[in-house]
Length: 266
Image (cartoon, rainbow, N blue to C red):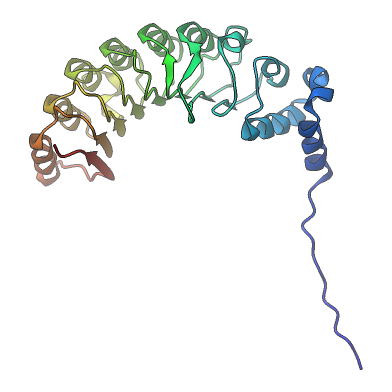
């Protein structure tokens, strides 16, 4: 009796991938030679190190390279020690310093200012819950990185209206902004919505900004024609008047079709 055979196709990892994983698994043995590796290998190793959260102050400077475009440090333990020593990186466009598990006190304004000077072409900067970052850092970042278009400082609770004034003055290309759990007030939102970014701003998250009132919502919906996402949950001073203002905006001839609106009813 004839028997049928099936062709089995196995998706085997490439030798390059296997080698990269081997380096990560025994990082201590290769750490001193990381700086001598070609950029293509550094990129692959850096990607895996980012995903596993094993980038530290001791190895970051060994693995970065001048043409790096994106750097994810969100689940790694990096502090000012690394940021203050960063070389000039003119190709870096995105840096993710978000702290997901708990507040990060290791990155301060000094580190962010150093980052902004070393990487003037940054477009996307995430630094959620970096609790020692102040207005001074945001102001310097806005001045030094004029191409900024996505900015997340949610949970940076020391920030005030001065940061919004700087964004409105310098960040012409800003499209997405998270300022949740900060100390901003209606005056800061007014300066932002009257700034250069007002015509391109599409997303604002100002949740848990307890000092904001209906005036903040009105400023944004009146002055930012491209606004599509507006989040202001857990803002106890914002009332039903904001919902009415939003409805009137939608029903007007120049009304904007929103993708997402979030607020808390008190």
